[in-house]
Structure formats: structure tokens, C-alpha cells
Image (cartoon, rainbow, N blue to C red; front, side, top):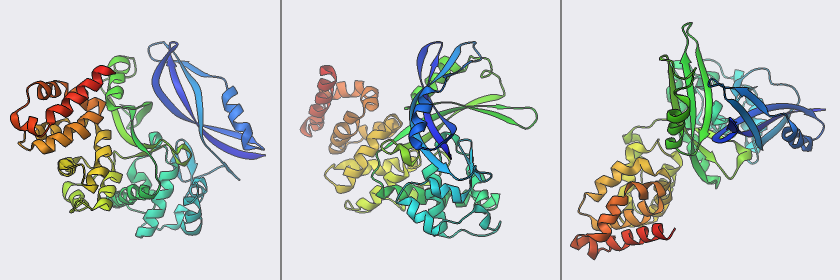
Length: 387
């Protein structure tokens, strides 16, 4: 018999009503064949319990996300979603071609790293890729713990994790995945005996929805309304077309200041590789240079603008103050492209700027009319009315 670990997605029902909450749960099996796992997950009894509001909570099986087998149960190493694995085991969880790369170059065990040893850039890249493949973001441990595991002093961890994050983001460039942000809601109670009680409450498609769950459901429930407790919403990026290579990669811990980011920004309108690198870093990491990115939207025909357009649209509402500043400028050509290719393609921004679109469409200035800003505003409004 082989031993298997399976991660499966479950949706939450509270008092018989479906919620937007999803949980990723780990299951252990001993079967001869992998094909036996899916039926076992489907036929497992539904997990139910009473929450703090004495409502029945049920977790309903949805989909098996990732399965792997191992010769013996992991005994030590970093924890990913409740499963302890070491570097040797991590590399065997990765999918080709990363798996082949790691098989040749990854360290057999994290313990090979002496406490004061400096990691080479190649070691960082390999370990970062391994981490990214199997780290299910909702369960990621603090960055410094992983850095310490990889042989760095705690005081060195921040610099090491910055390097890990940087090469990790760039590793996406050749993977042709479609990325989307998700928002993971946690609650933490600070205990009197120097312990913290942390709970994962759910995974949501927007920050607004996660905040809405706090305001309408969680914050008034027993256990969540204590003065020593707090909610947090972490931003993650998900490879939604490739579940088998990992659920989510946490981005909230990565930071780069404006000067570091500007050094990576395009200089010429044909610097598409630099534009791709900035996009790969993701939001909110690039927030300090959003104004710089938006400047490249002065002409959608520029090659770099084609890279930035879908990225800006995916950011949505957080662009509001930056776009407001652009709409106050005298550059009506720039406004044309922003209205047509950013606001008009983002449902969130369209709603936020609805009044402004109506004003432009009905009472344009002479120059806005000359540059046809009013026409694109009217097209956006007409399409909304038609739908």
C-alpha cells in the first residue's frame, strides 16, 4: 500500500446557506492506486460543527487540488498546510520541469545549510521555486521562519526573503499562467500567556468581499469581538489555470521601495521585458510606482502599454486616486486612453467613475470633444445600459 497526501477544496455553508468561503484541507490516505483517492474524498462524511453564534457550519467537498505519495511520513522540516516536509520532500512534490531541475540541484535536506552560511543566488532561486510550488498561501508561515530554516540568522531573514521574493516573482515569466489575486481572511486572538490563537476564516475574490464578511458576519460573533483580537486580510496571487502546481503564493510580506522598483521600470517604449518584470512582481508590491506605470498609458500603441494595460485593469479600485489625478490634468489624449483602456475595462473602476463618465459624455470641454474622450465615455455608458 502507498501513502498519499491530498489537498482538497471545500466550500462553507452556514445554517444551510452557501457562503463565499473556501478552505483547503489536507487528507491522508493509504491506497494502492491514486484513482481510489477521489472517490474516498467524495464519500467522506461532511464535516459539521457549531460556530460561536450556535449556527451549524458544514464544509462541502468541491474538488481535489493536488495529490502526492511518499515512501514514509515526513518527520521534520518546514510546515506547509499542516504537513511537515523537508527540502528533499519538497522537490518531489514539484511538477516537471521544475521537478527535474530540483532533482539535479536542490539540497537533499535543509539541515545541510550551516547556521551562518550565505545562500548563493542559484540556491535562492531553486529553493524559492520549490517553496512556490507547494506553499499553499493560506497556510504560509512567517517569512523569517522559512529564512531561518534555510540557514539565515533571524536578523538576516528580511534581506534573504526580499531576494527570495524577487527571484520567485521573476520565475513566473516563463510559465504562461493566468494570475489573479485572492484575499485570505484571518483572525488572531492575543492570549495572556504569550500565545496567539489564529484562525483562517476564508478565501475571497476581492478585498471588499473579505471586509464585508468581517462587517456583516464575523465581528459581532462570540470569539471574534474581543478587544485583544484582530482581523487581517492578506493578498495572494493564484495560478488559476494550474492548480496542480500550487494553490497560492503569498505576496503581502514582500516589499520593495520606490527607488528599487523604478530601477526595474521601462526606459523606452519597447522595453517589454522590463514591463513584464514589473507586472510579474504583482500588486500591491508595485504600488509605489503605479503613477510611473500609468504614464506609459499615454499611448496604448506603445509596446510596453500593451503589457501594462491588463495588469492595471486587474488592480481595479486601488487605482482610484491615481486615475483621479490623471483626470485633473490637461492631457486629454492620456485621459482618452485611461478612460477607454483602464476605466472602461474594469467593472470596479467603471462604477467608481460613473458620475465622471456621465459628466464627460454630456458636458465635455472643447478639447475633450476634440480628442473624443466624450465618445469613449458614452460608449462605456451605452454598453452598461445595454447589459
